[in-house]
Length: 402
Image (cartoon, rainbow, N blue to C red; front, side, top):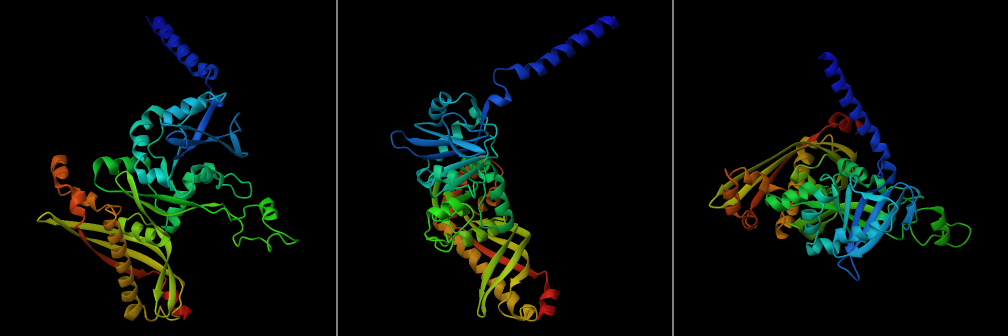
């Protein structure tokens, strides 16, 4: 009996081993995949969309090489799947979307609300991760991909992590994923602010461009552009959405206050104008609380924020000595005024990008009650106050420096 069990066990083990090793013999092995890192969507000329795919790895046949680390491939079609079917015929490998981590949509697509059809149909079939980032571009997707080069160094494959890093250390970049966008639009509890990017063709990225853009023996000094080095694409600010439609944009400053109001802020340098001049502080979010109340179908609420700050540029010359008696109250009022202003901008755009509806929805015991409340209509009459406490974390240093 034991020998039979051993024989059965050995047979199972052998079969499992064959399955493992047979993966190497499969016609579509890892080396035969063309991994798609970024999907870009622009308006098409002959068809509805012009879709660009950024492929990781070597330069594939019939693809435009933008650096040694990646290639781009594009075509037009009325749907993403139609374009993919066309591109399959132009590659010696199979397209694989398991590593896709960024979607780039031209702002015209975002403003039309056409983003919806990409995220309600495509993800499951293509096995795209719901954690993929969504970026709105002031330029075309092709310009976005090409503009990520600096000094011939490939930066496209690091777009995802670079944007997250910028948001973490500055607070002036909005970040949201496909999952968050879908949740916002399907649940109706909040709206999103997505990363917004720009293309600046005047930025000189390498020596070759400096030579082409200049005359004489001093190519840097004679350059027509005052901005030299870095990438021609920069990401900053926020594309503000009402449901699936982009309804406006925030600049770097307003995005910082949007991040503070929503609790997404981590750290960042913030400029505070005072009578003596502009003071710059480095702020770190310590605490964020939101409370709401519903009375006669009207929503009121308060957001309390505690920030630890350190002085980066003190134009007063004596902020440490007069912190408790003057500057603490003055700066706290400034923050509260700015937060109130940004909330009013969101409300005017009918965008709950701060996420007040998340807290309001907790007041209801069922999804049916929440839907019947019709939050977005009530949102227009919502009133919100802000309470900011600033803690001067380097108080001793600020005083002794003076």
